[in-house]
Amino acid sequence: MKFLFAVLVWMTTFAAAPAMGAPAILVFGDSLSAEYGLKRGAGWAALLAERLKQQRLDYSVVNASISGETSAGGATRIAAELARVKPAVLIIELGGNDGLRGLSLAATRANFETMIKAGKAAGARILLCGMQLPPNYGRDYTERFRAMYADLAKAHGVALLPFFLEGVGDKRELFQADGIHPSAEAQPRILDNVWPLLLPLIKPGRK
Image (cartoon, rainbow, N blue to C red):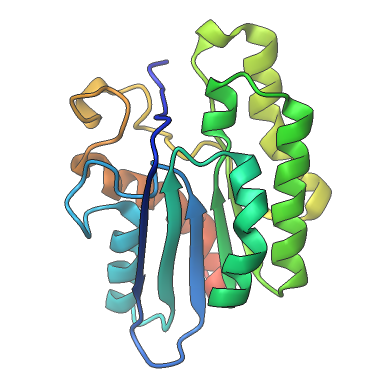
């Protein structure tokens, strides 16, 4: 599987509110959500804001993703972002950079638990986005890394998207020239991966 992440430092934050005081969806991720290499507004989170507006679902989207972010960085800043945004829904899209660095899975899991517990304590409904690693990281590590997301979702009772880049990660034509970051053409597919898991969190009873 051709699947890589960047270790870069670049922060992209935007907010799109369809109405004053609309409840917020906080996107908390790395370069895959931070519009790295894309025209502003072309990323999946921006497309999410557009879809919500089109479907007259009264939510704003706040993208607090940082390129190169690790789970440790996320755990460090989650409390401040929750206090700032006060989201109704928290989408966590992190862990890829941990895996590429071969970091301790126990430490990564602990960081995710910090973020999940903080989100739940703040009253946010949570969607955890799973990641996968290339096979060259070793079968044992890659399988335990993939299973970590399902284990976390089950342990904490949160929604899970098994693989954030489903239908994208193995298609070279859907990546930018660097072979690392999904292209603008891939962003609608990423949103389509997120949407079915997100919709029940923003519209209970709908599928």
